[in-house]
Length: 233
Image: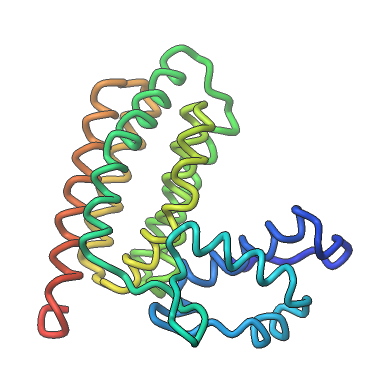
């Protein structure tokens, strides 16, 4: 879950800026930079042991992704988790996940999927189930959720879906963490297992339908938990 920044990269190079961006995005996704937290460039630069220049560039990219927002004279802050935004995100996500699962199953059916791609999906399913069954911290379970869906994207052979969802998963993971519910995570992994089974046996329509229902159910559950307030948590 931790990302290392290559110290031999040139700090003003796009590669280095992307490394800093990935590190900060992961910190936001896992709520290590919490919703509403004020962003101080000097503190981030000291923690990551880099100059403020790549930090400044990375922060602007994170603002573009909607993960940071203006905080008046205070500069920037981590964007609060908003239930309405998550509802819209899941609406957009639903057809992408259904398409990815269907494409992945089709590649299996056509014997186009590699052994490594199939194995990655099986490994991510096993790892996620172990984390939920052992009541691992929610950030670890949220990361495992991302890894499972990443395995589906890669098995689909459609790199555009992975690219489109990459930035969105930071929003999804932190919302999962904020709405911590072991029973919900258990249900999610039961659904993941069903999706994986249909994908790996090449059942195209069933895989697509299960993925769509999974996202729809997760969306409704997440929205309810985010709007329930402290008494409903």
